[in-house]
Image (cartoon, rainbow, N blue to C red; front, side, top):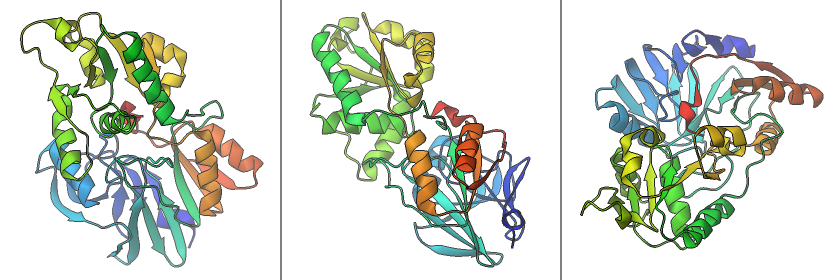
Length: 337
């Protein structure tokens, strides 16, 4: 069986004709397999959704309990037959519940990475290398210039700023699913045991992570109890990026704006956002990790999607690995990087 007989790109997304299902479709379909809960991969309106239990729970939190006609939770490593096609889910390390999806038939195995990272992270299941014939990899940071710093070092930069500017509230932009919880956990692991204040848009998912056994410590609402903006001086406040373009920011006196994203390595992006303290914290692989993963899978063919596709395809060609870009549309990273 040729790889494109098992999986092929269509306008709705990656389609398996033998199993009659899509992976992370960008429009409603009869049967969808979902890698993780970010909105550029998980959408409402499918007839049936198969995903890990945590991803299904996250989709219900974000989109409502009736986000699909029916749902089917799958455990990591569990083998499921879908119309004669073998399917299994494996940890991707991107956010809680995120998975790579292996699709296999007639001795041909294709692994769809979804979004993934290799670094150990207590707020997500650790990435697992899945040997395969074809590896479909994301390429969000698929250029050699992207070399992510050590996460604990970035958090220590934040804590040093807090010591240096004790009269300023430190506002951190962090996306609601995955990034916010990771930043909080990194702060705890680096000795910050004070209360951390969060925007209301982060509460439900932080509560979910805590219920799943991920200790985030003392979290409190970022609301003014006595009407004085100075009450947050020297404190850390997390909010979603959308809040930084709203009156919410103006309630804090002399705020120091930080932002946690892999894109903070690009100085112009930080400048455009008015970020004083860019924190390079990514939930995706950098260039080194992407190329290492390609080698680790042992795949003889690589399909590259949503990101800097050309750079990674060229690297594969120089290393005598067959590769092609998929040019899928509809995956905009939800800026969840």
